[in-house]
Image (cartoon, rainbow, N blue to C red):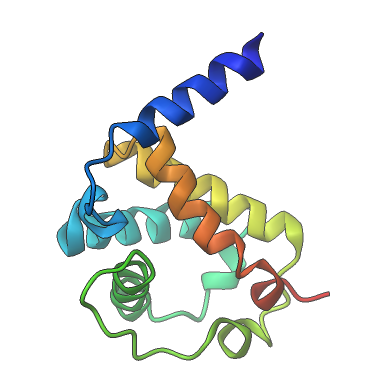
Length: 137
């Protein structure tokens, strides 16, 4: 019964989306993307599971790049000047446990911004498609 209720919530959320409204718009556009990116990085830098991956990172630059990446990925007007996901993560040694920790931090950042469950899932599905480019086997 719980699965059925969850599916109803998801479909109800999707049905409430106005025709033509992009994921970018539903997530609050670039300003919201900047807040989400900033929170994600802050949570991840403080997360003992993945903090070391950020030790040598230019944090302000990362936040800016993530903002543009989220903006572009959600259909916004931004141009992402960074490397593709495979090249950007090739030498980091990311495993599933690290990827999952980052996703948890992203979900927290999205919830903090007031992004609804169905919209979060739509966004996470776009990012999940990049799993193979990010996680090093």
